[in-house]
Image (cartoon, rainbow, N blue to C red; front, side, top):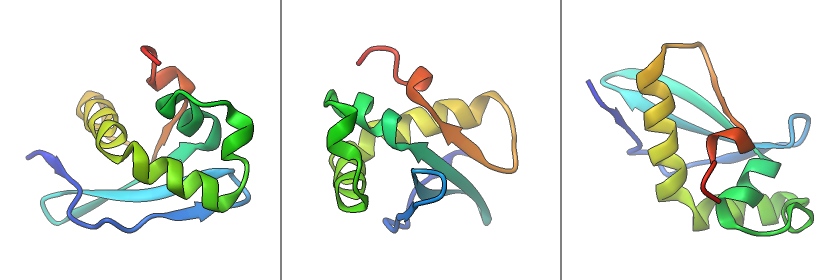
Length: 93
């Protein structure tokens, strides 16, 4: 099956400095985190601008399509209990 993102919800994890979001492979929920520094890189902005919860969520929303595409690629490589997207996952930015 393919990984889909029918649920647009996302939340900020202060302890991990990351945004949580989920994809679905059929009925199976697939959890993801994207680090704040990766959000900055995915949007081509200075990481200092993504320091707050509101800024991180806004950065996620602005780059949602590209983040989900990267998430699909990483998911297709291996199965894990949770996926953490880092700056290394956004090489072209």
